[in-house]
Amino acid sequence: MENNYVIETRGLTKEFMGFRAVEDINLKVRRDTIHAMIGPNGAGKSTVFNLITKFHQPTAGQIIFKGEDITRDRPAALARKGLVRSFQISAVFPEMTVLENVRMARMRKEGKPYQFWRSLTTLHPLNDACLELIDQVGLSEYAHVSAAALPYGRKRALELATTLALEPEVMLLDEPMAGLGSEDIKRISALIRRVAQGRTVLMVEHNMGVIADLSDVISVLQRGRVLVEGDYETVSKDPRVIEAYVGTGGD
Image 1 (cartoon, helix red, strand yellow):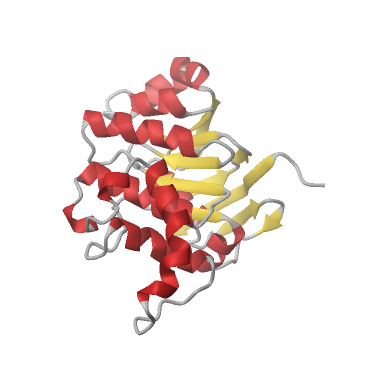
Image 2: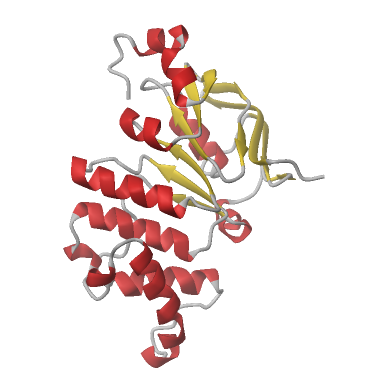
Protein backbone atom coordinates (compact mmCIF):
# COMPACT_ATOMS: atom_id res chain seq x y z
CA MET A 1 0.00 0.00 0.00
CA GLU A 2 1.34 3.41 -0.99
CA ASN A 3 2.33 5.59 1.95
CA ASN A 4 2.38 9.35 2.27
CA TYR A 5 6.08 9.68 1.44
CA VAL A 6 6.97 10.47 -2.15
CA ILE A 7 10.75 10.25 -1.62
CA GLU A 8 12.56 8.12 0.94
CA THR A 9 16.22 7.39 1.41
CA ARG A 10 17.26 4.41 3.49
CA GLY A 11 20.78 4.22 4.85
CA LEU A 12 22.04 6.37 1.99
CA THR A 13 25.84 6.48 2.01
CA LYS A 14 28.40 7.84 -0.46
CA GLU A 15 32.18 7.48 -0.39
CA PHE A 16 34.64 9.27 -2.62
CA MET A 17 38.07 7.61 -2.67
CA GLY A 18 37.68 6.46 0.91
CA PHE A 19 36.13 9.71 2.18
CA ARG A 20 32.58 9.21 3.43
CA ALA A 21 30.72 12.33 2.23
CA VAL A 22 27.34 11.21 3.56
CA GLU A 23 26.50 8.33 5.85
CA ASP A 24 23.25 6.59 6.75
CA ILE A 25 20.93 9.33 5.48
CA ASN A 26 17.27 8.49 6.11
CA LEU A 27 15.01 11.13 4.61
CA LYS A 28 11.23 10.96 4.31
CA VAL A 29 9.71 13.63 2.09
CA ARG A 30 5.93 13.89 2.42
CA ARG A 31 3.68 14.52 -0.53
CA ASP A 32 2.59 18.10 -1.21
CA THR A 33 5.14 19.67 1.12
CA ILE A 34 8.19 21.89 0.71
CA HIS A 35 11.11 20.05 2.30
CA ALA A 36 14.44 21.87 2.67
CA MET A 37 17.93 20.54 3.27
CA ILE A 38 20.30 22.94 5.02
CA GLY A 39 23.58 22.78 6.87
CA PRO A 40 27.05 24.31 7.13
CA ASN A 41 29.32 24.21 4.10
CA GLY A 42 30.59 20.69 3.53
CA ALA A 43 27.69 19.11 5.41
CA GLY A 44 26.80 16.85 2.47
CA LYS A 45 23.69 18.60 1.14
CA SER A 46 24.80 18.66 -2.48
CA THR A 47 25.92 15.04 -2.31
CA VAL A 48 22.51 13.91 -1.02
CA PHE A 49 20.81 15.98 -3.70
CA ASN A 50 23.03 14.48 -6.40
CA LEU A 51 22.34 10.98 -5.11
CA ILE A 52 18.57 11.48 -5.16
CA THR A 53 18.69 12.94 -8.67
CA LYS A 54 21.01 10.13 -9.81
CA PHE A 55 24.04 12.23 -10.70
CA HIS A 56 25.94 10.03 -8.23
CA GLN A 57 25.41 6.37 -7.44
CA PRO A 58 25.35 5.54 -3.72
CA THR A 59 27.97 3.37 -2.10
CA ALA A 60 25.21 1.89 0.06
CA GLY A 61 21.53 2.40 0.75
CA GLN A 62 18.33 2.85 -1.22
CA ILE A 63 16.35 5.64 -2.85
CA ILE A 64 12.59 5.09 -3.04
CA PHE A 65 10.27 7.18 -5.22
CA LYS A 66 6.53 6.62 -4.81
CA GLY A 67 7.22 3.20 -3.35
CA GLU A 68 9.55 2.14 -6.19
CA ASP A 69 13.26 1.52 -5.74
CA ILE A 70 15.03 3.90 -8.14
CA THR A 71 18.52 3.43 -6.68
CA ARG A 72 19.97 2.20 -9.98
CA ASP A 73 17.84 4.27 -12.36
CA ARG A 74 19.51 6.62 -14.82
CA PRO A 75 18.86 10.40 -14.45
CA ALA A 76 16.88 10.60 -17.70
CA ALA A 77 14.39 8.03 -16.41
CA LEU A 78 13.40 10.19 -13.45
CA ALA A 79 11.68 12.94 -15.47
CA ARG A 80 9.42 10.36 -17.09
CA LYS A 81 8.42 9.26 -13.59
CA GLY A 82 7.63 12.82 -12.50
CA LEU A 83 10.86 13.73 -10.66
CA VAL A 84 12.44 16.83 -12.23
CA ARG A 85 15.51 18.78 -11.13
CA SER A 86 16.09 22.50 -11.58
CA PHE A 87 19.75 23.44 -11.50
CA GLN A 88 21.60 26.02 -9.44
CA ILE A 89 22.97 27.61 -12.62
CA SER A 90 20.20 28.61 -14.99
CA ALA A 91 19.87 25.89 -17.64
CA VAL A 92 18.08 27.46 -20.60
CA PHE A 93 18.94 27.94 -24.25
CA PRO A 94 20.15 31.58 -24.41
CA GLU A 95 19.61 31.99 -28.15
CA MET A 96 15.96 30.90 -27.95
CA THR A 97 13.03 33.02 -26.86
CA VAL A 98 11.17 32.38 -23.63
CA LEU A 99 8.35 30.73 -25.59
CA GLU A 100 10.75 28.55 -27.56
CA ASN A 101 12.50 27.38 -24.39
CA VAL A 102 9.22 26.38 -22.74
CA ARG A 103 7.97 24.79 -25.95
CA MET A 104 11.15 22.72 -26.21
CA ALA A 105 10.57 21.37 -22.70
CA ARG A 106 6.93 20.62 -23.53
CA MET A 107 7.99 18.72 -26.66
CA ARG A 108 10.30 16.63 -24.52
CA LYS A 109 7.45 15.86 -22.12
CA GLU A 110 5.20 14.78 -24.99
CA GLY A 111 7.93 12.70 -26.59
CA LYS A 112 8.07 14.84 -29.72
CA PRO A 113 11.62 15.04 -31.06
CA TYR A 114 12.79 18.43 -32.26
CA GLN A 115 13.27 18.39 -36.01
CA PHE A 116 14.65 21.62 -37.41
CA TRP A 117 13.22 20.97 -40.89
CA ARG A 118 9.62 20.84 -39.69
CA SER A 119 7.43 23.87 -40.27
CA LEU A 120 7.00 26.02 -37.18
CA THR A 121 3.25 25.87 -37.77
CA THR A 122 3.34 22.24 -36.58
CA LEU A 123 4.38 23.54 -33.16
CA HIS A 124 1.54 26.03 -32.78
CA PRO A 125 -0.75 23.55 -30.96
CA LEU A 126 1.76 23.61 -28.08
CA ASN A 127 1.78 27.38 -27.81
CA ASP A 128 -1.38 27.88 -25.75
CA ALA A 129 -0.20 25.55 -22.98
CA CYS A 130 3.28 27.10 -23.05
CA LEU A 131 1.97 30.66 -22.92
CA GLU A 132 -0.18 29.69 -19.95
CA LEU A 133 2.92 28.45 -18.14
CA ILE A 134 4.80 31.60 -19.07
CA ASP A 135 1.99 33.68 -17.62
CA GLN A 136 2.01 31.54 -14.47
CA VAL A 137 5.64 32.49 -13.79
CA GLY A 138 5.10 36.16 -14.62
CA LEU A 139 6.95 36.27 -17.94
CA SER A 140 4.13 37.07 -20.37
CA GLU A 141 5.72 40.34 -21.47
CA TYR A 142 8.97 38.47 -22.21
CA ALA A 143 7.45 35.59 -24.22
CA HIS A 144 9.20 36.62 -27.45
CA VAL A 145 12.41 37.89 -25.85
CA SER A 146 15.55 35.77 -26.09
CA ALA A 147 16.63 34.12 -22.86
CA ALA A 148 20.03 35.80 -23.16
CA ALA A 149 18.38 39.22 -22.92
CA LEU A 150 16.49 38.45 -19.70
CA PRO A 151 17.56 39.89 -16.35
CA TYR A 152 19.06 37.15 -14.15
CA GLY A 153 16.03 36.83 -11.89
CA ARG A 154 13.75 36.41 -14.91
CA LYS A 155 16.02 33.65 -16.20
CA ARG A 156 15.40 31.78 -12.97
CA ALA A 157 11.66 32.21 -13.52
CA LEU A 158 12.11 30.84 -17.05
CA GLU A 159 13.97 27.86 -15.65
CA LEU A 160 11.02 27.15 -13.38
CA ALA A 161 8.68 27.44 -16.37
CA THR A 162 10.69 24.87 -18.33
CA THR A 163 10.66 22.62 -15.26
CA LEU A 164 6.87 22.99 -14.98
CA ALA A 165 6.51 22.21 -18.69
CA LEU A 166 7.66 18.67 -17.85
CA GLU A 167 4.63 18.40 -15.53
CA PRO A 168 6.62 17.23 -12.50
CA GLU A 169 5.02 15.64 -9.50
CA VAL A 170 8.18 16.43 -7.53
CA MET A 171 10.46 19.41 -8.14
CA LEU A 172 14.04 19.33 -6.86
CA LEU A 173 15.40 22.86 -6.59
CA ASP A 174 19.14 23.38 -6.20
CA GLU A 175 19.73 26.75 -4.51
CA PRO A 176 16.96 28.58 -6.38
CA MET A 177 17.94 31.92 -4.82
CA ALA A 178 21.64 31.73 -5.72
CA GLY A 179 22.89 35.02 -7.15
CA LEU A 180 19.57 36.85 -6.78
CA GLY A 181 19.03 40.31 -5.31
CA SER A 182 16.42 40.97 -2.64
CA GLU A 183 13.60 41.88 -5.04
CA ASP A 184 14.19 38.82 -7.19
CA ILE A 185 14.34 36.64 -4.07
CA LYS A 186 10.89 37.87 -3.06
CA ARG A 187 9.56 37.25 -6.56
CA ILE A 188 11.02 33.74 -6.95
CA SER A 189 10.06 32.78 -3.41
CA ALA A 190 6.44 33.75 -4.08
CA LEU A 191 6.61 31.87 -7.37
CA ILE A 192 7.87 28.69 -5.70
CA ARG A 193 5.08 28.88 -3.14
CA ARG A 194 2.54 29.24 -5.96
CA VAL A 195 3.82 26.42 -8.17
CA ALA A 196 4.24 24.12 -5.14
CA GLN A 197 0.47 23.87 -4.80
CA GLY A 198 -0.38 20.24 -5.51
CA ARG A 199 3.31 19.30 -5.86
CA THR A 200 6.18 18.21 -3.66
CA VAL A 201 9.32 20.35 -3.53
CA LEU A 202 12.70 19.24 -2.19
CA MET A 203 15.24 22.04 -2.17
CA VAL A 204 18.74 22.88 -1.09
CA GLU A 205 18.90 26.54 -0.16
CA HIS A 206 21.31 28.88 1.66
CA ASN A 207 18.95 31.78 2.36
CA MET A 208 17.54 31.19 5.84
CA GLY A 209 14.82 33.79 5.40
CA VAL A 210 13.53 31.83 2.41
CA ILE A 211 13.80 28.57 4.36
CA ALA A 212 11.78 30.04 7.22
CA ASP A 213 9.14 31.40 4.86
CA LEU A 214 8.64 28.41 2.57
CA SER A 215 9.57 25.17 4.29
CA ASP A 216 7.19 22.73 5.93
CA VAL A 217 10.02 20.42 7.00
CA ILE A 218 13.75 21.10 7.32
CA SER A 219 16.51 18.51 7.48
CA VAL A 220 19.73 19.90 8.94
CA LEU A 221 22.86 18.07 7.82
CA GLN A 222 26.24 18.14 9.53
CA ARG A 223 29.31 16.11 8.59
CA GLY A 224 27.36 13.90 6.24
CA ARG A 225 24.57 12.99 8.65
CA VAL A 226 21.11 14.31 9.49
CA LEU A 227 21.52 16.27 12.69
CA VAL A 228 17.97 17.49 13.29
CA GLU A 229 14.68 17.45 11.42
CA GLY A 230 11.47 19.40 11.97
CA ASP A 231 9.72 22.66 11.21
CA TYR A 232 11.59 25.97 11.27
CA GLU A 233 10.64 26.86 14.83
CA THR A 234 11.85 23.51 16.13
CA VAL A 235 15.04 23.44 14.10
CA SER A 236 16.08 27.07 14.67
CA LYS A 237 15.93 26.67 18.45
CA ASP A 238 17.75 23.36 18.64
CA PRO A 239 21.10 23.81 20.46
CA ARG A 240 22.78 21.31 18.13
CA VAL A 241 21.83 23.41 15.10
CA ILE A 242 23.03 26.62 16.73
CA GLU A 243 26.32 24.94 17.61
CA ALA A 244 26.71 23.54 14.09
CA TYR A 245 26.48 27.01 12.60
CA VAL A 246 28.68 28.83 15.09
CA GLY A 247 31.88 29.92 13.40
CA THR A 248 30.88 28.46 10.03
CA GLY A 249 29.09 31.50 8.63
CA GLY A 250 26.13 29.18 8.00
CA ASP A 251 24.99 28.75 4.42
